[in-house]
Length: 168
Image 1 (tube, one colour):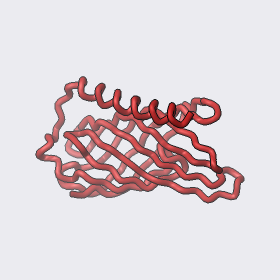
Image 2: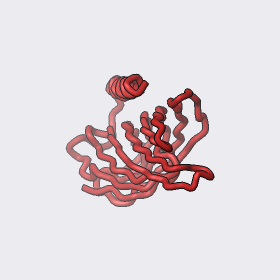
Image 3: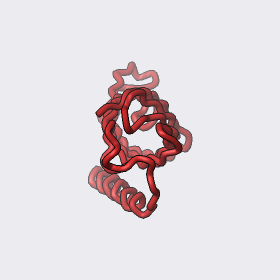
């Protein structure tokens, strides 16, 4: 079961990258001009579950890779002991100097009370981030997911809000 989940996740992320390469969208920033390639941010809800601390890097033009971590040591009322590791890749469509529409795909590995599950889904968002000089980072995302564990279920309404800083 775990091998199937991992294989599905890898294939999903790979196919997304192929799809992005077919878009042929011109960006406002080129690979040589993007200087603030790193960002650290805190996300409430979103891909990481309840919250997550994340690092993101611009890898090529307006493509990003993101990894994060979250741990909740709950009393069992809402959450038990839960570790989440969100990873994602996105493409940023510039709308002006520091505003972007974000389209991507995320995969969150979840370990909850000793049981492993996986959440896979798209990312649709709006982002304020100056890729040239860095500075404040803010975004709001809609992130519906397919939760794969003992059972497969759809979580059609889920969103997140992020705040942080981008830097060189």
